Length: 465
Image 1 (cartoon, rainbow, N blue to C red):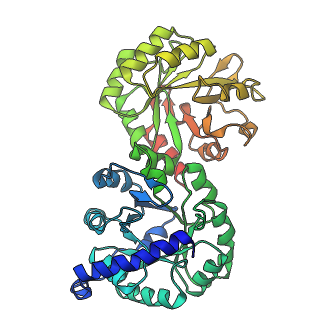
Image 2: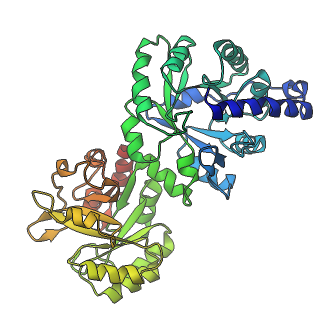
Image 3: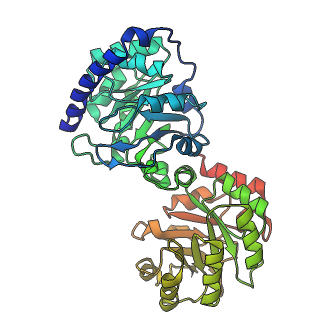
């Protein structure tokens, strides 16, 4: 047991002694009823499930979410979660049993009580506050104690998330026939994380002869992390990565679906459907030659009717016009699709509202353009969008370029790919590792007229893992 973990467990015994005095075991045990919600069943659904965690602080990160508003958190979590996890350790995680009680009263999903379980009192206490599952850590418990706590949990119909972090613990979990196995990617000695831990331990489960699901925990920050591990496990437990984000709803959406922009919006209702389906951003095109061009007045009507994160697309237009639209619509980003140079972008950077990003589109015809590395390194740009170039036309071609040209030496976290992306190939687009995909004609019935059915299907494919 690591020094940090030993210190936590030592304090846990002291804390529990005090808690048992204030809330005796007999009181806790009285009138307990078994749980009727199964975390195991929720995680056994066809697609990988997310256990999303209500976590205020941690030993490795300190205070993570200063404004810990459970109503806000649950509003962001419940549309996507297979289960909700609640920390109840007070000293090291600033958790609370009050949080557990609050959550269990308000959600339909099974709720996991996350704590350092060391005795039976905690198991009863978890059910007293209506938890449906508990965490048992093999780094903390010997087999005898684990079995004792597990038998009690089973008597209360509490599921058990059995946490392992190394080969020895995985061997024990298999022998103990743990049916929800959580692989902690965090090194409990130095608190670093490595997703390869899941990749290393999952093959050991070939020796298991019982039914089980595998959850990967810790170090899962992006949709690309999810796609990397999805072939190996049935779910993910994510807390810190989400709790650290100001826009929690957007963070959950991007974790689950990836970063997807639906561009060429012309109608408020279709825009609302795109956001509701999973779009992180919607694009409004102001280039006069585009079949999907909207006027600033039309764009304003869309934005006012459908709040969200909008990207304005401009092609060789006066900087004054770009700035005016960006300010009036509170754009999240300005996407430049013409011959705008560094001087133009620097002027924009100096004048745009705080937080408004600058994205530059460049065409790909055959090979990656030689400018790609310079643009990715350019301080005036937040992102670079690669789109298929046909002749002199970049964008709006409805065709895709050769995605095999995208490689890991590029700054993938700044890269967006566009051109011909549809429900049929969006999974391949995301598999390139690019941070975002940009969808337009691939979900249309006519230029500027998005198909709600195709948009729904697109995000269904993004969730198919």
